[in-house]
Structures are given as C-alpha cells and as structure tokens.
Length: 138
Length: 309
Image (cartoon, rainbow over all chains, first blue to last red; front, side, top):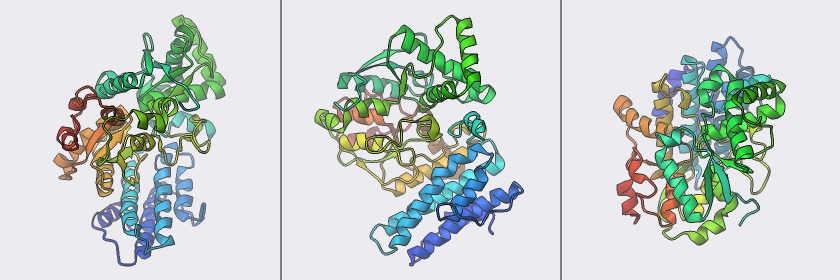
C-alpha cells in the first residue's frame, strides 16, 4: 500500500495507459488506498466488504462511521465510481479518454481531502457535514 | 411560469453579500428587476450563525436563523425567504430541520425569542429557497430563453455548486423528488439556467467537491490544494469560466487561484463569475450593472471577446 503522499505524487504525473480500463482500475485502487491509509491511521482494519458493488464505497462507509465530516467526500467517491463505470463499460468509447482525465482529478481530490484530514481532523466538520445534525443521528 | 411562484419573496442577503459578495448582491437584484421579480429585504436581519456559531453552540445558530425566518414570516407576511448564499441557505434549512425534529431546539428558540421580544418561529411557517430555486421555479428555462437578449453562446462554463447547497441531504427534503426537482448527487439547476441562457456547459466532475472553505484561513495550504484541483479540473473539461452560486465558494476560488500560483506555481486561467452575473449579461445587462468589475477574478477581457459589454 502506498502512502497518501506517494499516491499524490503518482497522480500528479499519472498518464493514462493505452488500455483505459486498466487505467481506471489503477485509479480506483489509488482511491481505495487513500481510504485504507485513513482507516489504519484511526486504528481500524480496512474492510474488504463492498458497498453497492464497490470496495471504495465500503471503505467510505467504514471511515464515515461516527465521523460526520467524512461525508464531505462521499459524493466524490461516488463520482469516482460513476466515471470508473463509464470507462469500464466501454474503454474504447469516444469519451473514455475524457472520462479518465476526470477520474484522475476526482481521485486526486479524494487524496487531497483525506490527506488534509490527516493533518486537520476538523476539515469538513462544520460546513457541509453539519456535525450537530449527524451526531444527532448516530 | 412554472408550478411554483416566487414572484415576491423576502430577501435575505446575509453578511457576505454586503462584503466580499457584493457583486452577487448587485447581480441578484439586477436580475430580479430584469425578470420582474420583487425582492423585499428582511428587516433588521441578523447573522444566520454561519460556521462559527454552529461550531460553538448549534442551538444558538438555530435560534439566529429562526429569527430571520420569524421576521420574514410574521412581521413581513412572506411565504418564502430567498437566500443566495449557500451558508445562509444551508443554515436556515438546518434550523427548519432542527425545529421539526428536536424538542430542545424548539425550547431554546422559544426562550430566546421571548427574551428578544419577537414571535417564536415554528417549523413550516415559511419556505427557504435559494436564488437558483427562485429563478428556476418562477421563470423556468423556457421563460428565461424567451427573455434572453444576448445569449451566452460560445461561453464554456463549469458549474460549481459547492458543498452546502446539497449536503447533508436530509435537510433538503424537497430535493431528489424526481423529474423537475434538484438532485443532491448531481445538482443541475445552475446548469439548466445557464444552458437556457445559451451557455455551453462543460462536463465537470467536481461540482460539489470540498474546497476546504471553513478552513480557508486556518489551514490555507489544504484549501489551496483543493481549490487548485477544482480549477484544473474545470480547465481540463474545457471551461473558460466557473459559475458560482455562493459568495464563500466564489471568494475561495478567487483567493486560492492567486495563492496557488504564488505558493505552488500552479497557474490556471479559468475565470470565476457568479451565475447571476452571467444570466444578467444574457438578459442584456451591462457587465458594470452586474458587477463584473467588482470580481477579483478579472473576466472583463474574456467577456468582451465574447461580445459582452
């Protein structure tokens, strides 16, 4: 497993391979590793369970448990899955190259957000995560 | 006309629109005039509680937002209050949610309202809407198309909604209600309105991505990196302009665009403009009238090259 800094660096210079499906797999794996880093740092064992068919969403669910601010990257994780699906459905489609560029940026955002939270836990707590409401529901 | 009518609403600009978000305030009012919609500013309004008060005591934030709704509903007799700022909009919605679901919120709000000497606001007495709902539901895409005098054709726009317009989804019960309603996972009201104004919306992946807004001053590097990624994603999607609908998002994008170049050497050329400014231009208003000159991000040259004055 790469560290978040290593993933960040890898993404900064990442070029899509000829096989865009393989590229999408690699990017999704980066996103999963980012969440694994967060969970391990929190003393949790990253789950292998999938949510809605994807481990990334399973990891997100695990990371968000008891931590409302994690929801600030839920849609970003789902957006990553959406673009992954578009690419893997037909890697030779006309817009697959544009979609993999988007996927790279989305995964980079996940890395930046979680990387930011590793330094400042409160990131995302009092804006969209609206901590008081979430805590009420826990 | 669409199924909802917000021709006359209480207008809650909030503090940002009187400061850094002045161009948003100006353009919202000008667009309202041009569309024949009436805004009546909430009398003696107060802070919504923003992020700071919510951080210290969420019940006080609920009370502060409830006071704004109380004045709009009870003293001014409005059925809807329109808040263009995502922070205000979110907090009024949150207060509404709290007052519907939490006994303690109701008790605190009642006690403070009595002490302050105004009628206690109760959930459901007014509807809170965003500037996007205001135009989308009252004028609609067809109505807007019919009024466009100088369409935005050829202007490539990435629509950035920020986070507080859709999250957390449980405080926005009217969203995700099928065709015609706003989506929390893929918001589209701004896209719809700007498409109706002739803009070429680009396929932008980070519409609601976190910009580190609440940490913009305390942890600036994190915010700068997040914003920089949003700006670059917009450029890669082919955008010339990022349309915003929140003064905090707007200021954050403008400020960190400059900081990203200075601190990290990451340059981006995409311009940042309020969606109301773009609609104003499409309606034939001048750039000056909608406050283009007041933005930090200088879009004047680009907009002139597209034929806007």
